Amino acid sequence: MNLWLTRLLRNAITAVTSLGSFARFVISTVDGVRAEPPQRRVIVPLMVEIGLKSVGVVLATGAFVGMVLAVQIYNQLHKMGAESTAGPIINLSIVSELGPVLAAIILAGRVGGAMAAELGTMKVTEQIDALRTLGADPVTYLVTPRFLSCLLLVPILTLYSDAIGVVGGYVMSVKFYAISEHYYWEQTRRFLEMWDVFVGIAKSLFFGGAIGLICCYKGFQAGQGAEGVGRATTNAFVAAFITILVSNFFMSLFFNTLYRVLHS
Amino acid sequence: MTDVVCATKPSEGLIRIEQVWKRFGSTHVLRGAHINICRGETLVIIGESGCGKSVLLKHIIGLLRPDKGRVIFDHIEISATDETDLATVRRRFGMVFQLAALFDSMSVRENVAFGLYRHTNYSEDRISSIVTEKLRLVGLSGVESKMPSELSGGMRKRVGIARAIALDPEVILYDEPTTGLDPIMSDVINELILRVQRSQNTTSIVVTHDMKSAYKIGTRIAMLHKGKIIQVGTPEEIQNTTNPIVGQFIRGEARERIEESLA
Image 1 (cartoon, rainbow over the protein chains, first blue to last red):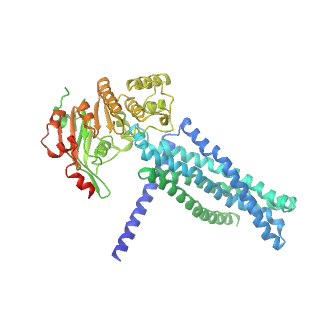
Image 2: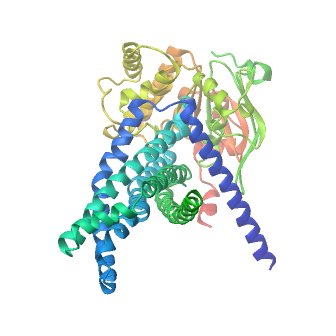
Image 3: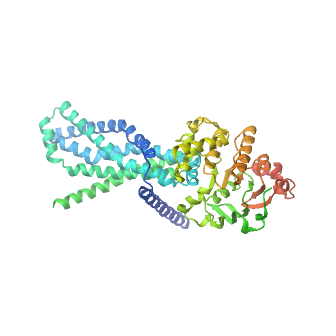
């Protein structure tokens, strides 16, 4: 019993300490934007890596999400004879839920994993210490530009993913299942509001920031050797993945409540 | 010969390490390490692998903070200075890392110029000429555009030294500069350390377990054992030591240690 209690207490202390250290990390990163705005020669290559090189994978994800949604939703609605309402259901799901979440997850894997591995390697090869000896703050120099790139580019990539998802859903519904094109768009226009698009962008902004911060933090926490870097990369992806799913739930609740309050 | 008076008069030491204690988890690495380092000398810190030599070196430049004790550099208490102010103090230091720690994503030129971009407003031309000059000093030329991954171990160490001396620091810290190099390249690095010492008149602190290197470059040699400095002296004094632990180390005798490691 005593042993169990000691272990629980120790875990609680570790959790609080880690949270405190993450909070300090977040503050330093955000403060870095003011203290030392990233230089062009640092941030441009990062944006190419994070943004441009992710377009393909994000488009592929978006297209298949749109198409599979159409397949599932059409089959369900067909049983009830309500196929004409497929448009808003598919498009709403893409724009405010699945688009941002799946784009963020794929980016957490591609971009977040790479950032954690890169920073972890820099830590174990003493490059981060070297930065400090040369008068650079590693968080400001390495994390702030990565955080800003994710914050800016994840929403843009999500919009790409949404756009191709909408096209994918349309192609399957109208061209493959022969739902009336007129009804498909007419119903979508009726039920899909700018609010839904805004919710999707707001979520992806949060996901972008979270991916940047969590994955860089995990990289900085890497233990010794190749094993340490590997573990940091896995931890980064898992932590980002869980944060995306959990925060998406709470953000959906929050935005739905806000919508009701604003329209009541 | 460098004046080593400061070794006995603490107030004259450029760097004073005063009773420094450091623990990582349950491992006590430093247990009251204490030494004064004089301006202009080359102090070599020797000791077994894992005895805390690199940890001690990192305390001098403020990369680590002691649990107890103080590190003072030119009347500045490094161990109590915050990270922002340390960035300014560190301009007076150069550090050469064990595996060079060159920035992978930058070319040799960008690596050497890194400190110059951060701490000076020099023109591109001036920076380029300093980079070329420092690279020439370490015996490299025409490698400015190469990436660290294209260099051999010895070349990486040399670029690491060029990066450390780019800002003409007052103190240069070398963390095991000859580890992992063949005997010839080790001697090349020793010669480079001496050359840098003479040309820039710096204070150098070298952590190593390579005794050949220690005798060649050291003004004084200090032995770190179980977290404490157990003897400090000139290379001759260390060679003629009566301390059995120092004697065993400098002669590289296993004695009962083989039983320990097999147990």
